[in-house]
Amino acid sequence: MTSLYDNIIFGPVRSRRLGISLGVNLLPIESKLCSFDCIYCECGWNDDHRGKRRFNAREDVYAMLDETLAKMVKEGTPPDVITFAGNGEPTMHPDFEAIIEDTIALRDKHCPAAKVSVLSNATQIHREDVRRALKRVDNNILKLDSAFDATVQLMNKPQGNYTVARTIELLKMFEGDFILQTMFLRGEYLGKTVDNTTEEEVAAWLKVVEELKPKQVMVYSLDRDTPCQTITKVEKDDLRAIAERVEALGIPCSVA
Image (cartoon, rainbow, N blue to C red; front, side, top):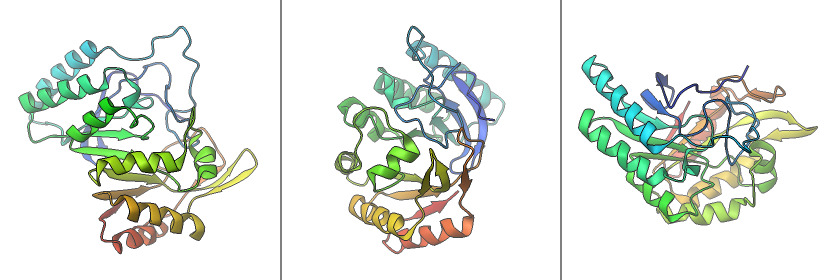
């Protein structure tokens, strides 16, 4: 069963990739709002948001984050990282840049050793304000699940005019100062085979990795319930084999 984050601030949780993570959700509390509709998303499918509140207010995010960080520090359990994730794509928020500015100020005030991370599907990096904000955080973790448009359409179901080629050109604007994240899975969706672990898929993806030269790559597979029940987890050994090929390019790669 998929599940939503039920507040603006959630956790802290122990992240497979980031340590003790305090989550920030800029999206609706009662439903998912995202520019992707991934078949593996733990939050389920996108909802119809016509007539509904789409984003949490900047002021509310600030107040709740300020209060939570103060409490955690007082209790002697400051977070390792403040992570923007939640019920959809955080960079869709119209005040995303200002919220990042607020968050960095609150981090510096309460727990300067903590990192600020953003988990993003990279669909909004055509916006200059989003790129500026992502360049200010410690970990801007940007998604690319395949080098092929057909696979992205099947796995991620992007809303609007998404192409891998355009995304690659925009990712180049970070000049390697980002972490590339890729979900690997196998299975079937709408009667079509979905498998981005084939040699054709991995070889093409590695070419993109080599072209982009991110400071780090994160590869992972399913860990929680998914809205599509006909996809399966890729085992750690297979992920490690992919990671070794990334590291052969001189790029650090973690497996989660």
